[in-house]
Image (cartoon, rainbow, N blue to C red; front, side, top):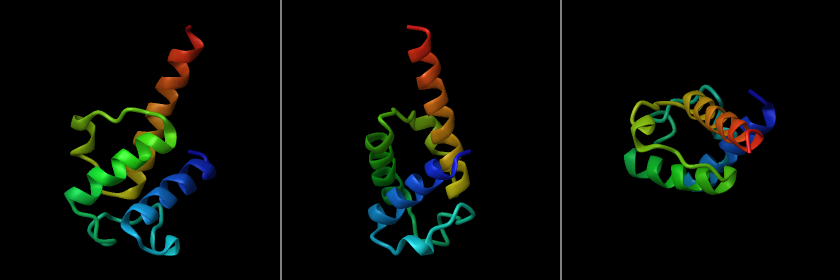
Length: 87
């Protein structure tokens, strides 16, 4: 997973939650940084806009920390680029 992707996800989370960027790390658990289910929805919309992806609702429910969120975004970006390459 690229540092750029991680930094973009961290920035989206920090901006959405209105918390300092340095308080969010790849190893942060959502509960640690005060992200509840409503915050998660807001962050997901922001991530969809940031990366121009669509995040399926069923995948969201199992995400509990920043690392899982980064991995999910990475997987969706890979699928998107694969689809674009086949066109």
